[in-house]
Length: 194
Image (tube, rainbow, N blue to C red; front, side, top):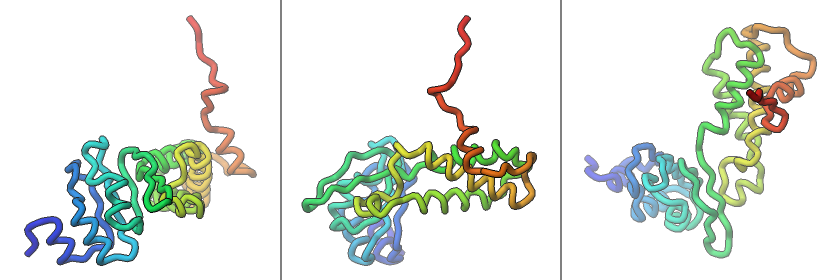
């Protein structure tokens, strides 16, 4: 029976380790090297935040796996230079899907939000990851694209709601445009002055 995390990795031989315990440094050099030894593309998700509580840094993950890992973090890390290549770690965070899921549900006036909408959101997000993102080690699109991501997820979720007779309104002819037009835009917001 394994008594340490490293021993557990050696015994279980996982394809992924996911850190959500806020134990800064739990993914040690030895743990990351072992993951790289047993996996061609080890999945390393150090999702705890703030950064000081991350199980490892992006630099540690890329360095100790010879940049073969699939890395996501819970707090932002700066781009990493390793062997002449720049890697851009991205956050595995709910800010990618929850706004779009909420948008689609509110837009369609969903009577019920089934678990499947989360799969719909995840699929849309995965489809929005570009080859150049993956080339830089980014498993998610840039956060600067979050409005486009939210619009796409919102339209897909609303489509699911409409297709499953869970909507409280009629489906518009151009669902994508209607959902995008329904998004709040701070540039066009009017504030009441007293």
